[in-house]
Image (cartoon, rainbow, N blue to C red; front, top):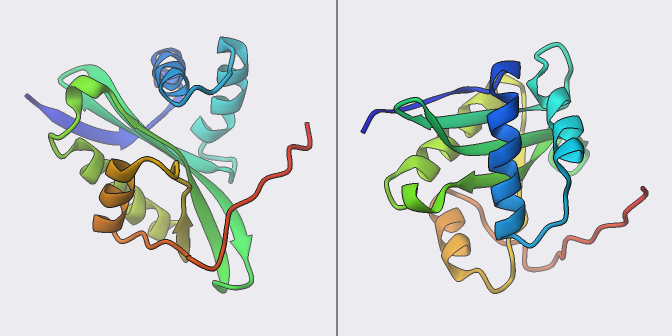
Length: 151
């Protein structure tokens, strides 16, 4: 089993659209193929400053991805980013791929002057919470992430 990692490029768009679709089904999120395409394209353009997607391959098959989206924070003194989506195909889990994707995403974020990474995890997903804690993410007990959809 040959695992490799790289920043996603427009070459991966079509297969990435399908893998993101798998993640959305897994999380019971509603999305169309066209919406996924439109949302992914800016993250594959190195000249835009929205963030990046790191992908994992097993041999030549795309098996996982992490999407990092940039922001800015006064509290943490500069640029921050969200782990917007993070997914490894079920058959490829527990092989170290997720850990490596996250570690490589942290390194790439540091190269892009990111001071802090944030993420959200389902309250009932104890496995994911444990995984993230082992990877340096701590719950901010006094805060609760809230969202207001504008579109």
